[in-house]
Length: 205
Image (cartoon, rainbow, N blue to C red; front, side, top):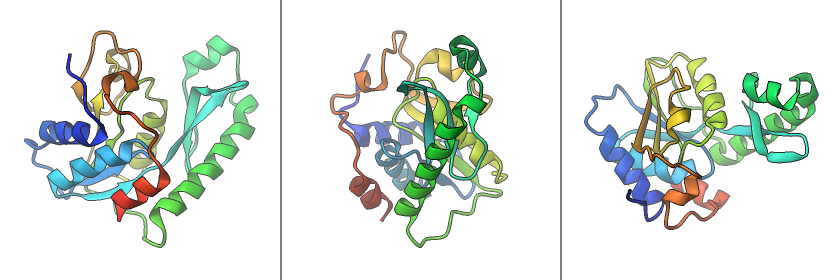
């Protein structure tokens, strides 16, 4: 199965997959940081407004890289009940971590948006874009936030997705690659460097 050279190529492939749909006043929201370069290519191709939706992973105690939930700056956290049960955790035990990540989401949203007002979402077609879908925990929190603002149509779009994660979403998921043996998002890119804040700001400028 093919790989993408980088996030820009992945974004162009994703845009081609989305281009045959008639979008109503489209808004493309990239998930920082890695989703924003992909989202920029999609927004350029669809002649759509580009902005961000910042969702932060809530990590398991002692294993911050293992996401058990996610939260945006101004919404309730979304947890994976099965993971909480498996780790014998409660939402109350994670409340401090959740608050920290909510604050970080607010800080990053302010950094990326500057003095621009938040995008208007109501009655528009909204495409939430990331560079890949593994567990989908941050994407789920981002979609939950967007849905509260009454979009006309909401889609999650990614260059590559784990098949088992795609099936857990109520929101339609568009993916270019759905490999049988997913592994990790980075496996499907030749270059998968950490995206910097400067690159996010440049894409949004």
